[in-house]
Image 1: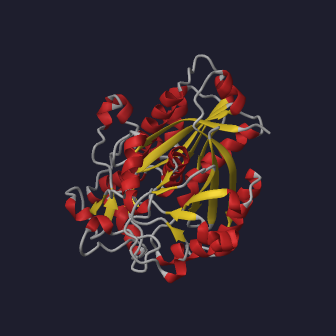
Image 2: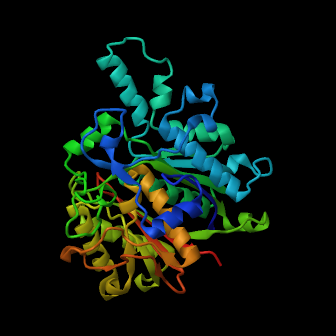
Image 3: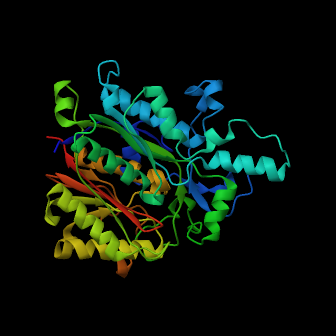
Amino acid sequence: MHRVAVTGWGLVSPWGSDPDVFQQAVLKGESAVKALSERADGPWPNRPAAWIEQFNPRDHFTAPQLSTLDRTSQFAMVASRNALQMASLDLKQINLNQCGVYVGTGMGSAGSLEATYHHFFAEQSRRLKPLTVPTAMANAAAAHIVIETQFAGPNVTFCSACASSAVAIGEAARKIRYGETTVMLAGGAEALLYPGVVHAWDALRTLAEIDSVDVSQSCKPFSKNRSGMVLGEGAAFFVLEEWDHAVTRGATILAELKGFASTSDSGHLTKPSCGGQARAMQAALRDANLQPEDIGYINAHGTGTQANDSTEAAAIQNVFGKYASQLPVSSTKAVHGHLLGGASALELLITIKTLQQGWAPPTAHLDVVDTDCALDHIVGAPRNISNLRYAMSNSFAFGGTSGVLIAAAAP
């Protein structure tokens, strides 16, 4: 079995594409959540969301490229480019047949589909863009990345709702661990903030109410007065590399991907299962050959919904037992929103930065912990965790898919 090194990462977020700036915002509990009513580009429901304003596609792509690039693909390509640049990976010096791309996304190219429906039904036009299908297909982002990089190994898009990018990253790591590839570019992207999509989510009654005092505090994971989740958008990608390959070429190793597991609740379509989540965490620990007490921090799924937060807290208590009361936990969705298919990747980046710096972010806006969510929550300010070696990142999805990743600090 081969070890898996993380040698690069890239992201697109409401705070830009600098991982350090992003992490500082998360550590400070600086929220990107606003009221959708502030936007003038659609009939929005009265809900909060976290969107990216400072992103101009023309800064990154030519006009011909943009004709086939949905916003999800744009985010994915920029984040993957940044990851490759950080890894200092010379594509002319590696075997491209041993390199692959795994992408996670929950709703794929939602913007292109919504624009097509609007064009067809609202405007009653029967002349649609000839490239509508390749632009809107769920695997478009992965396809564009492999065309640009010329990676000729496996190219797969994973669609497992909120666990999509956890599964993409975990399965990419397995390709390296079993010697099938040398380099994998893996991550997730989501851009679903369009009126029709948000109204559909609103109809599901899972979205948070706008906070009556401060809209930026509308998402309150694990809080007694939480009212739901807040949608976000963005992307994060990682360069995963076979350990010896990274060492030989002199790469900076940022962390090690130590464990991964994915399980199915095999139950309700939208109601989370404590048993399914617990099995995923236990399986990830076995995969990493670690004991529960080895984990020093958990970046929780923590969406801010009543059912999810209490279920995840119970699952953590189930797996970690008495140690759960001493295990620092936080959810960062309170500030960057829920990226659905891109959430796991963005939160893994936060988790690895936490391993690097020893400072874990708080769960913002958590004033009164719900009695059903009793854990060692990080609140108010970042917490310094000394000798932090292993951290876990949880992702639990509609459809019952659980994805858990465990990262280890670089030696």
